[in-house]
Image 1 (cartoon, each protein chain N blue to C red):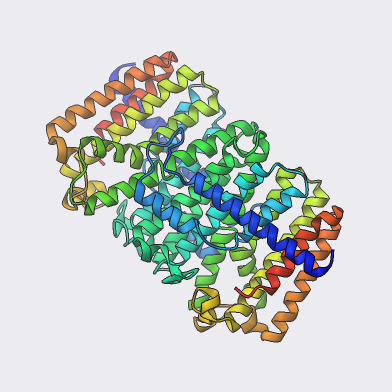
Image 2: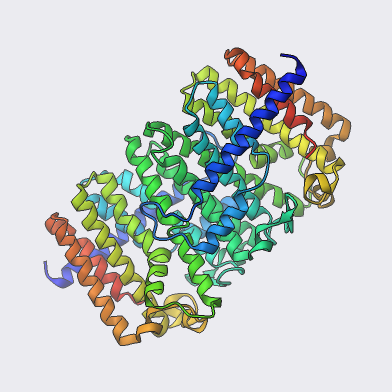
Length: 310
Length: 310
């Protein structure tokens, strides 16, 4: 396949994963209560749906689905795991947008959840999504093998919690008001936690569901790490260069707020070079899985992440 | 054993469960990172410890531990599950106290988390505790059988999420600003979700860990339901009658805020009679477990919950 065909195939599968995720999230966030639930309050459910449905490229779900496909995992298992991860991602956006945090009014070109509803509802909708993510993964509908489900819950919690995403957000906020700005190592660690951990989990989830060998799992993990870092550098570059229309949020807001970014530390050109290096690292890690041609779609994903313009 | 001796034994075991829970939570919230974590940011961890350690009767952990004991479950399994549940309870207090929610400055006689730290840190500490709860339950250290761990995660998520505790908090907040106050059925449902669901989970967890028969599990579930309802009526009575010193928070604040309470709907005397009925229901359910004398400690717990003065 030539480069243009490969890119076309990538976009087709990215879109197909997004459609499948949207439909599955819509079904999971239906008003019907599950055993053990009492009732799903209408307005809270509406806020959870608002925060989750109708948006985004669904990059994390795509990565779960395609990593799982490397091992021939059933799509239903991967899709439920993908939805759980996307719920965590979406809850984190809702809480990050709150007035006490980043205080953003716009997200993907729409009012943020606390603007569309109210602050209390946004906090609870985030809590509800975070909780529901673990419900979805632990449910036997995700996989018949409870060992895999428990392993997924554990990995997802570690990626999302105080030693992962939540911790990264705490470090990022602390850096804004700190007397001394974060140095490069601290910035990379903060970013590896804040955005990297969930992207890494996406491919780890594929390895867990697929019963990867330790060597394969480690190689995929390295891929996820490089991809996550590339995603963040690209984000910093976008923030420095992008325009608000393409982003659906204010451009330059991170730099303007004194947030730690790699562009700020290295300059634009070096940051772009670092991004290319990370794509190369990601591609090498894929070769090391020994899974051959099948991994081409994930190599495309790394290139896409590094080159994205929104 | 006479009544005084039984009460003494109950308080001894309540205190012993509280001590064990405090020590286990302290160990779980240590700075040491676990595999899959990157680092535990110091201030975030401090806020999570502040919100979790050094307070409360630890009624929920006690119920997990004593329900599990009915079936001879190892204390380590029950204790980790108890800690997870307490983390969920504590996170819910942190988020409920936020300015956008109940806007409370005091909790157990100390500044609330967002007062002692800041609002962003309180939100993240809550998110971190909620996430960590599922980590703790899913970890093989909790039980060798992954089926039990996954079942615990699922039950805990359902009790805590949009169809349980989080949903109850949403209904409670909505009631404050609604044109029509909640009627009795709506108030009972809201309370069954907001405070009942976690108390019910505590005894359900014992049944899950202990491999209870369906009949035993159902009887324990009925006990948990009645106990949860009694807890909430007692809370409404306390709010109406109590003094701030004993409560460590403002008395009458719920009624004053127009919150739906059973005392408001039934009057004080009928509410007290309802509380007695619920204790009787709880005790009957315990007899129906067929587990005999061993359940006496849980009967004491129901009486304690109904009679508590703080």
